[in-house]
Image 1: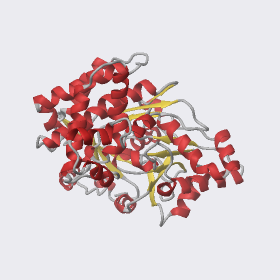
Image 2: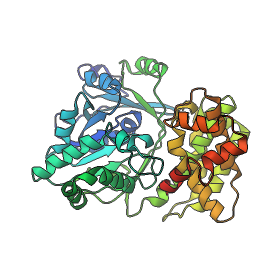
Image 3: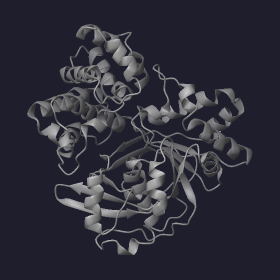
Image 4: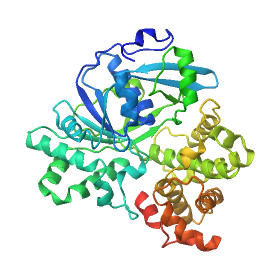
Length: 437
């Protein structure tokens, strides 16, 4: 794409900065969300003339993104879609995509480089390798980012380099604190490195928000017809985007705030609203919507019964959220309903339904626990939970790391007994709910 970008349609914005400059960010999990969110913000910073913030992406599992982007020199398009049309921008912030395993030495070298200041993550909830009680599952972690990150940090320490900022951009409650705790568990056997990590590195909390559906072949074909070029790495998103970051960095950082990012002292109110209202309603629409025969979010929210359920869940969640300055949860809920109804997004319910066991504790169970403590009922959340259990029982297209264990628990159980086995005080997700808090 670098060699052919001059053929790009004139209405598509292009990067005009030096793309050979230093890599300042190593990012684990360079999927569609990162490319439509953090890389997009960073591209805007680089476009102003800032230097040293190119991104080296790391794929932990699949070489697919590397195969898409590396032949294109890291370039890809981001198209924002709404009912009013679409606008496309060529993103130039990604220098390369490395694949853990085959490129492990290169990943460690990037982390250990004096040019690197930030290591960021969009590895999804399950990528943090947490056990049911929220602690680190060391066996699973051994195949994730932890060994690579630890080796890179050790090399920095040995070379007398400063520490790094670790920036989690995943939907975990208090994601920075969670990542810091899990990293310390991984380093438990190396006390000297653990002390250096605590003294030199920071792990801020963040909240990220943008709806980024999975790209389809039809999306790519329509894009090629519109912009005059084929893009194997194309991503599509809604116009809305939000990124809230705790202002706690170990060293330099891009001036993301010049492009809409909010730096705050406490991310918790924003994070709680996102997890409990947006993500909670998304998961409700996924399981209840699939059960009703819908395929996309905009179809589900157009169903009067499901719209009422999603609205009910947000009404249930709002009183459990300690709002920050200027937060208006009623307005936020109204905006969410409008965003869900965007017909241009075609956000598949099956995509949202993936990995439910990793998402439900912070999306539903935390709200449920708070309301129960106040003696309040939560009918919308309970209906969502029933739909999820039915989804598991059905066994069709269930994509969840705990699916075999959960399905075994539910086998032969009555509705009430199955509910207690999963959600009861000693149920499988009870410890996860506590960990989410």
